[in-house]
Image (cartoon, rainbow, N blue to C red; front, side, top):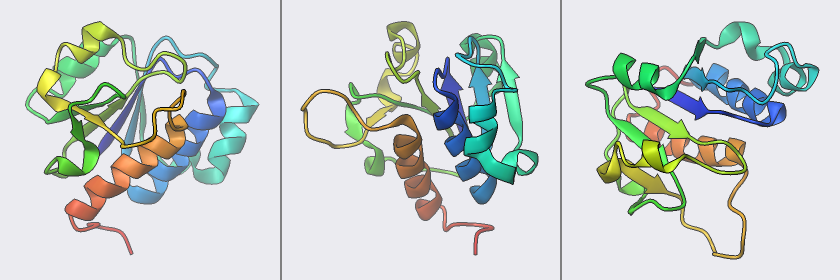
Length: 152
């Protein structure tokens, strides 16, 4: 399983997601521009001592990610999704893509996979869920569907 963060802005969110990835064997992909340095103390603190247990790849842009994962299912997490995240049949090689905290995914990325836009149901009272929470919710549904392989 893969989590892709496009232009993440808040180091604590990325650190928390890295921790979740380490504990689930999920690969983490960060797409530039990053709103922080990978040496950021908040990033490291949020990831605790899990950074050496997660595979992290940094990409220059989303086009590189798209090319690398050609042939994989790529799901875009967005409040503008057409189906709920649990209505997808996930596989172990799927790619879960999340946008930056303040803007989400840009329209040009959303237009690449219109049939694979997924969302988490929530009340429409303004802002959406925290990025780290949203990533964990969707990832764990995908892991549940694939039998939590390799997890105890």
